[in-house]
Image (cartoon, rainbow, N blue to C red; front, side, top):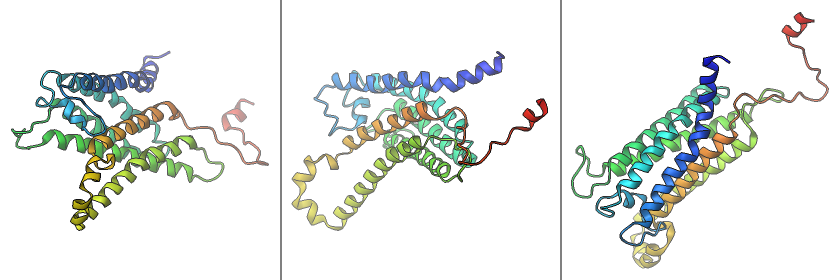
Length: 263
């Protein structure tokens, strides 16, 4: 076996090897920080940034900072995996997907290294951590949408043409991506409704305050789980090579030219 072949196989398998450690570092560090949080940490109402804040968790904020940064580094090979294996469907869309994931994971690492500052601005930005975290979410969302586009394009291939993706994978991509988009659209519509009808917010202030639908922390955790589910599903189900096509009934298989020469 040549050295280039060994390196290629290692690059192909690296995301699969790195994924469990990334999940353990990300959620393990957050879980430990939540257990050590000075006040009771309720994930349904508190945002993830509270665990990384020197003000809210002065003695243990560095634990999730290190865990999330290392998890982001381990997720980088996933972007290369997407780029290599989606080329068979569409090279431009594969580049968009890989670029979204590369950018998203890079911004995730930066958001973990730049902790939330509630008083002093960082590099002239008052809430640089929040801006990096939200930009990371947007970039990863673009990567997920690009994967869905590849799934749709692959499903529209003509009968008898090789398909590069499993239909079940494309369906899971759509499910994982449609859920956050639907939530985002619903929250945006509710926000606009409240801005246009302020009396509604005044009359239903108590209900909106205690409802999970109006707490960013709840949707942050849900969205994080969905993103990791998307990454895990893609890593496990994305074919290493284009799947063999099924010939329509009654069509004879045409032998390859190389087989005819050998005969």
